[in-house]
Image (tube, rainbow, N blue to C red; front, side):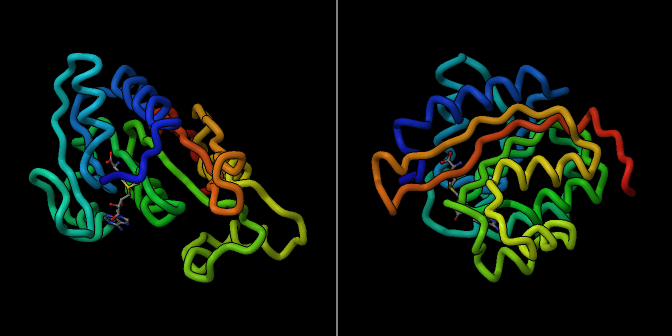
Length: 194
Ligand SMILES: C[S@@+](CC[C@H](N)C(=O)[O-])C[C@H]1O[C@@H](n2cnc3c(N)ncnc32)[C@H](O)[C@@H]1O
């Protein structure tokens, strides 16, 4: 079972095909692997072979994968050998992004960041945000997740990214989710703020 609704799965698959076109190799680290539906679909739809390392903290998904916190796994393996890191999170994969920036990763990163609005972020998320992000919440305005991610990437010299905004509130009302799917080219990073 995956959390990908039919309405949006095609966009997520398309983004990953674009990531492959940009990447320096076909090695993919699926840090939020689930059943691996998206990369299965990329392979079958486009007739491509992808070398995958799947990680998920939950047991019981299909196929072979590493069970554990992918941030810990990323700290113990050579992430640089992967042309693509896939962060298909239910929330905002901020600690994973920060780690990739810290280690100077230079491949392609695919991000899913979902949250209905960030004016009142969960406490846990807030505690994980870098200081510059936390300041945003001191102001009274509601910031969108797109702005938040854009600010963060920009602050770290990451200016080449493609983004798709996602909102299914019209279908699910208050239970709907809103967020972004994005593709970030870390090879073009121009650090300017340290
Ligand atoms: C949106 S689903 C991934 C779906 C998947 N991309 C696919 O194609 O089927 C998100 C997954 O991330 C996993 N997850 C969340 N936080 C994690 C973490 N820190 N480390 C590893 N897996 C995590 C969840 O257990 C869940 O299975």
